[in-house]
Image (cartoon, rainbow, N blue to C red):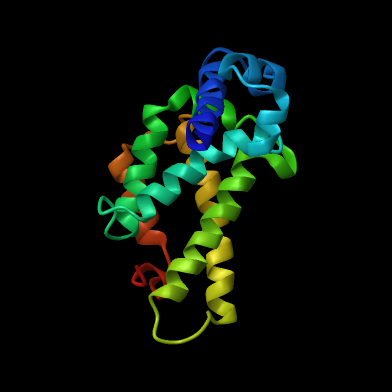
Length: 177
C-alpha cells in the first residue's frame, strides 16, 4: 500500500509537469491528482522538489543496479535515453534554480553514487584526494552537460553523448564499475 501511494504521488507530479511549469505546481494540485491528503504527501516527501528529484533517483538507482548497465557507458546511455523519452518533464525540471535545482540534485546524487561504486569495487579503502576532486569536477560537468543536451544545445544522439562522457571520465574512476 505504501509503495502504491508513493507511486501515485510521483505519477501525479509527472502528469502535472507535462502540463504546467514547475513553479506553478502546488502541493495541493499534486495531492488532488493523487487523491491523497497533504498529511499523506508529507509522509513520503518534504516538498515538490523532493518528488521531482525522486524521478532521477529512481532511474539512476535502477540503471546502476541493473544488468542493463555493465559499465559507465551503458549507464550514461540509459540515462540519456530516459531523458529523451521524458523530454518535456526533464526540460521543465531543469528550469528549477538554486540549491533545490534539479541540476544540483543530479550532481549530488551522481557524485555520491560514483564514490560508492568506486569504493565498492576496489581492493583498497577510500579514494585519494585527487580522485575525490576528479569525481567532483566530472559530476559537476556531467550535470551541466546533461542539462544542455536535454535543452538541445548539443546536436548529439544519446549514443554520441554517452560515448563522449565515457571517454572524458578519468581512468582512475572509469574502470571501477
